[in-house]
Image (cartoon, rainbow, N blue to C red):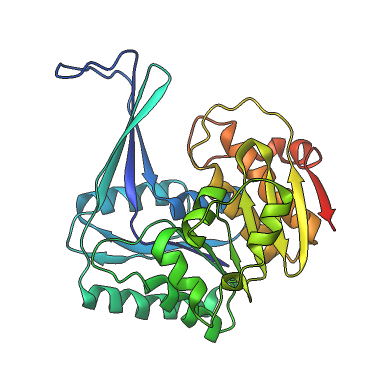
Length: 311
């Protein structure tokens, strides 16, 4: 079973508007509300891949109740730490080919709530074969919180995929207990290392040799339409994907993490792991909904993904 963690979930609300008028009334005919947060997107795609998954994290209030209802409706098993504080809404206004986002920060967690979740997390690990940790930390939790989760997981022999950024990811990588896999993009790599990372093979190989990455088995650098550059232990791979009709790219990185987790959980070959991860990312971008794939198209696009080992 894959344990998918979302520490700061949300209800994602999408408002499509032909023309967004400032300081005026904007009426919306079609509203889309989705149980959101990077880890919930991961869990949703894992479930669509017909792999056993359990979604966890921290939820509260009527918004938290709505998220659970939506997950149950989609038949995604879940077990969250419930708190009294209200979870958050995240609003996207789609207008004139642009997307304006209004993101609530969400609840501020207490030290006790953080400790309660770690206790719950440790219990849930008993039945987990692999863990995914995605997205940002809620306010109130220390930046080393994910590091603690990785340490707990590794002490129990459970591999962890971390898809985060900034200080929380840096804290994870600077600890002796390393995550099994990370999935940064080049901008997140630059932020992590403190200097510009270019998209070329030579520069990426050099940067991924940085001491901060020692002990991390998989580093998947996502590069959008250019596929990915990957380090698996001491081997490097260039992964290219076909041109696709992009409908909604939001959540494609989460779908990539889901594919990566599923393939690793199934003990697939290196090539198959990378092709699966890229395929789920592509399939998400081809759908309107965030965190959705059409599994009927999987084999077709899987066969189009090319994995080349770099010497």
